[in-house]
Image (cartoon, rainbow, N blue to C red; front, side):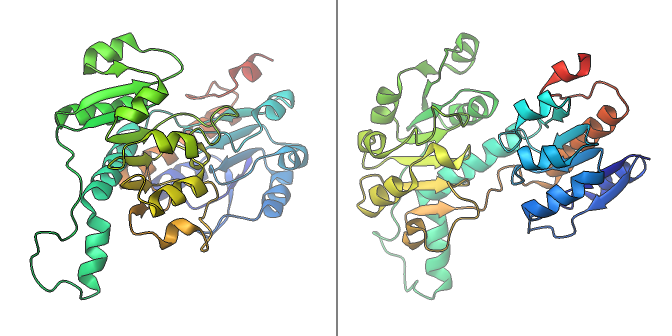
Length: 325
């Protein structure tokens, strides 16, 4: 029976299915990832690895995994895996695409609405015993219905966010490396360049992939283009935004608010200046965190892993060229 290392507890239904097929070694802590050196040690005897986006599967891990044949990343993204090095070693890499589109879009909207209407701030205000009476100036926010929504990156999640905006009667704008004519027609969404989008939109929602070209894609210059009443939402990747520049813009009220589920460093350091600000809603990278979605992700990751170990084509290979080598 093949041996597999799993770097975090996953949905029990998926774990049970995996244990029926292979010998499982499981890191037991649900919220604390295994140290890198533990992963290196564990893959020495493993033929399969089921890991998360927070696990760095780099050259040290790959060189230690002399028996390693399949890496199943329980995530859509896989920038935590050195795919080129894995391919060179004939190791199959898989991911779990598509499953979290609607759930992450829901979360983006939760951040958008919360930042606009200051719900997190209001909750804290009430719990602290500060609410004395109804006041016409208390916790004034921004209207969502009929506003302009700018989507940066019109992939599956970006389009799902825009589709929700259509239900709110919003003017829809987007920018991307390439135009999406079919989506434009479906959603009546207008293609513009980034500068126009930032200057026009009341809400800017980021859904671009993280590449060398998109690191700090939104920095001080871009934030300066936004309206003082605008709100920035990021549920994509933390490094898309220059976090210090954002904190400064929020502190100086050059934009109204922000909602963030991802950060340049995760978990966010407790001395990060964003934590001192009231006009930003912060979540601990929970974009796909619904019971149904996380269970389905885990099951997909297991299906990928088991199929690869059987020598079959998995549902979602990242480097399918390994299968024909």
